Image: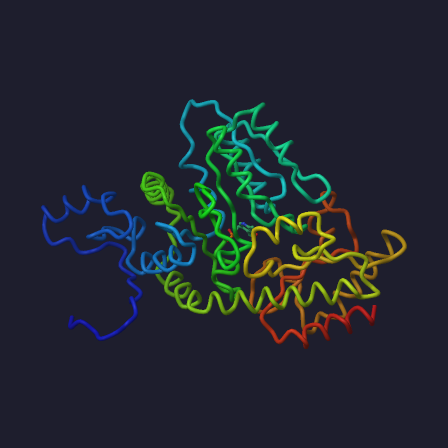
Length: 387
Ligand code: PLP
């Protein structure tokens, strides 16, 4: 076919790629991991795919790192990032922060512990912040070889002092994996502070339109890259070329979208903080958040797109009823959708989802969209006034 004068990488839907003859085929297989960033010859789309590689290059630019690998979901990225450090027979422990995505906690309990037999150490927050002294004590006591955390936790928006946690972990010889989904590389890049791997649920802000599932693992170490490519291939966690193409398009507006999400969220948080129907707002830039100082030390370009707030009331039942009424009042404009990072503002009630972990019946998590902020504030104001 004639070469086409297009600036785009097409969607290569090939399952397998044409290898001219036996020597070419042998070279393709033997070189497979020699050119891990971009293979000379593609073999099979579950291994590597040119459309996926183009999007990976864009993601590596955004995250400011040597390489990025796409997977078909955020959880698949978490599986790859963790599994490359698993060695049969080694009885070492891994340490997980407790304040992480519920699906990741279930993966730890139901896969790592129940099926793979791992011994896990948990590190919990106290009063919506992390004690570095307590973290260091746990590292000293258990000597875990992997530490896993989220830079901004969900739904209490605790900001971890990631550079300090990395320093302590490395002193004990542990690898550090940071889930940076909530912060995004727009405001914070953990690899700049020595994180070993960063993962994202690209389903959220990187894709940003609520219509694509993807994950990404980002790093600088070439050995880890080889292990990650091999593991992704062997368990079939590859992203499809069609989804990679769409994600590449969405990345073109990444910084624009995130600036709008995060500016909107800050304005909404400040508005809610002074509202008479609101007891408390959790947002990393607000001085009442226990990790506000860490947030202003780490983040240069905003404080995230999630706002968690608590509607006031005199009892559990009253708060619950007021929360239900608010959600009903705004339901024409703000949908209850169990995800985040979409272009539209969406919400999740905290107590019905997290149960005993966060028994706050008046609490709502807003994932702020990119709508004009004044109309959003008006919707929230009317929704609260009509309770
Ligand atoms: N990490 C975080 C912080 C998340 O919120 C999620 C999903 O909500 C995941 C990882 C998992 O991502 P996915 O749903 O794309 O598998």
